[in-house]
Each structure stands twice: as C-alpha cells, then as structure tokens.
Length: 237
Ligand code: KIV
Figure (spheres, protein in one colour):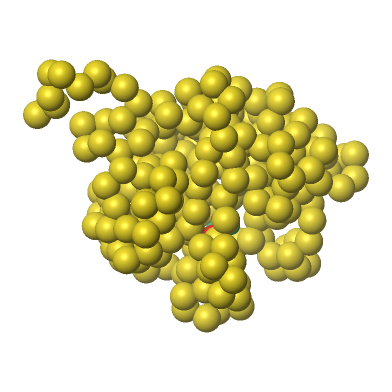
C-alpha cells in the first residue's frame, strides 16, 4: 500500500525510478547516470553510488562469460542476470538488453521475449539495437506496456556487419541517417536512446533535437546522460 504522507512522484509503488524520471530529468537538464551490472553484490554497491539506472547489458557476454562479442548471449542468460540485479537493488531503474536474435525475426516473438524479460527478469524497460527498421516494433511494444530504450551508432550486435568496433556517423549521410533513426525511435515511443561510438558533435545535435533523453557512451559530454560498462569503470578490462 502506498503511504498517504508520501507524495506520488517519479518513483513507483516499489520505490523504483520509472520512465517518468527520464522525461523529468531531460526537462530539468539533470544528467542521468546509468551503469551496467550483472549480479546482486555489484547491484547493491552501484546503488549506493545513487545511479539512476542499471543496464543488464549483453556486454555480460564479453566481461562475464569471456566471449569476443555479445552475440552468443541468450535470453535465459540475460533473465538470470536481471533477476540477480533485481534482488540486489531496490531503487534504480532496471533495463534489460534484448539479446541478438530475440527481436529480429518476428514482432510477435519479439514482444513475447520482451515480456519475458520484464516478467521473469524484473526489469522496468528493455533495450534493443537499431533504428527506423524497428520503429513499428517499438510502437507495438510500447502500446503493450513495455518501455523501450533505443540504441544507435556503434551497435555491438552488428559488429560483423559494421566490420569491427568502429566509430559510426562520421560522414554527412551517416549522420543524417542516425538523426532520422533517432527521430523514428522517439516517435515510435522510446523513452530514451543510447548513443554509442559516434562523434561528440553529432551526439550533441541529436540530444538537442530529441525531447527524450540521450544516454551516451563514447559519444562526448553533451548527451543527457552517460552509461558505462561496470568493468571498464573499475578498470578491470
Ligand atoms: O550491453 C551493454 O553493456 C550496452 C552498453 C554498452 C550501452 O549495450
């Protein structure tokens, strides 16, 4: 039961930060802090640092499982780590990555997989990589009550197609495409978008253009928030 003497603010009944906090932070020009985390012990520790959000990223395939890229990570594995992080934290907004192959083949399958991540993993939002080509899917998910965070630029699940971990959006055509992808994701209902590995000037332009917050990683300091892989933050790579 919510206590009558506590104002109904951006936190939900479970005291977790919700998507409303993301919108409010952008409006109030308050930078968002997100860090990846994969287990209960670190979830307790990063929460003490007062982060806004924890991303249970498929980067766990590299930093926890020892793979060379994120592609082998399965939905069951992400769910396992989401549950551990959910048990170790109370306040942070939890975002679970949809692994490679769990949202590409059909919209029905993608919605089912995202719903599993929320029901079984206990996260409050899911993240998927890609732009305009996923706008219809994002729209469908958000209409089904699944908050979606986008991810543009250097999208690690496409590492083989990109030809390696390379900065994206360098040419004017690529920058224009990224801007239009960002708009498409916003219009489809994304509550935030990660911008990874793009020039700082482009990230700044996208952040100015969008009304939803951008969360940068390797994209300069002008984004509305930053996300770091925990093991990089701790110098464990
Ligand atoms: O999987 C992950 O950790 C991510 C971040 C790099 C944004 O997607």
